[in-house]
Image (cartoon, rainbow, N blue to C red; front, side):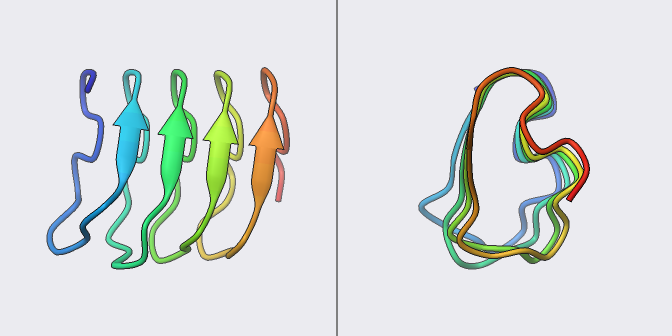
Amino acid sequence: MGFQALNANAGGSQHVAVGSRALKSTTATYPNTAIGYSSLDSNTTGGANTAVGSYSLTANKTGINNVAVGNAMFQVH
């Protein structure tokens, strides 16, 4: 839910994306949760990640099992 949320998702299911650009680049098949503007927006194949807060885990591309709670948490991964 939000502009460009799950924009690149082609085959993944059970993702949760709330906020503009949340999970924008993901092609992962394993579920991720992103809540907040641009949270997990660079994620491509990483799975089982949870990002809550604007810009949280924005640099994560392929990492798995990460949790970030708070504004701009783990922008550089």
